[in-house]
Each structure stands twice: as structure tokens, then as C-alpha cells.
Length: 167
Image (cartoon, rainbow, N blue to C red; front, side, top):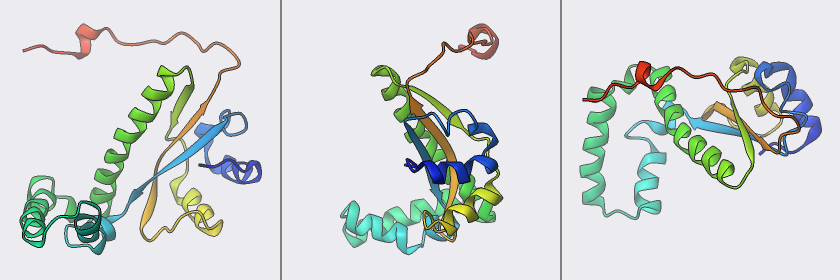
């Protein structure tokens, strides 16, 4: 959660998609995704999560680890490159993003997801500011929350029949 106005000003030049939201949003969130070294099926992070968060017994961890290995190596081929693993981890963050935005809308708070940023400049800036460890994390997406000052432009959408097929 980036609330500090000075930090928001530092982020602004490398976040072209957030030019309007950074100075005005009441809450500005950076959503991070874990990188390959901590998302790999054999990583300490994954094993620690199964042991201490899920509190699974070792025999169950062994079984789940086999499924997780097959998922990462065969089903989705995530271990083929660090980018593949990061992209998959980023997709997982969009579940939280969607839930945050839906709940905000239900209580009358506007939100705006933002992917318009220079990842190669923003991440070192955030590391320099002591906000993130770029060895283990990368920026997945940003989101601004607040109350709108002006009414938004009308939404334009494709017709449902052009994008949804029923079988």
C-alpha cells in the first residue's frame, strides 16, 4: 500500500498508466508476484507453506509435491523459464485483484487496475526504497482505490454474442 506522497511522486515517472491515479487515489496498491526461486515445486517457500501454513503431514506433502512437480514441469511447463513461472504467479495475483475490485465496487468505492508501468525501472526504484526484494518478487499489477471526482466516460464493450459461445 503506497500512501506516502513523496514515494508516489517517485513512482509516477515510471508508471505512465497511473498518472491520474497516483496523486488522487486514497489508496494505491502494488501487487507483487513471487519469482521462480520461491515458486518452484521444491523451494523452501512452498515446502514451508505446506508445513507451517497448511500444517500438512510429511506424507501428504510428498504426495502434493509430486502433483505440483507434474503441474509445473509437464502440464504448464512453468520450469522452462523464469518468465513462465513469474507470468503464472502473476495470473494468481489477478484473483486477489478481481476480488478486491469487486468488493470495493459493492461498497461504492471506485477502482482502477493499472499495468502501465516500466517494470525494469519501477522494481529497482522500489528495492532502493526498501519496499521490495527483487530477487524474490516482481510487480504484477497496481490498483488505485478511491471516490471519483468526475463521472467516467461511458463504457464501450463488444456484444456478448460476439465473445461468448454457448455449447
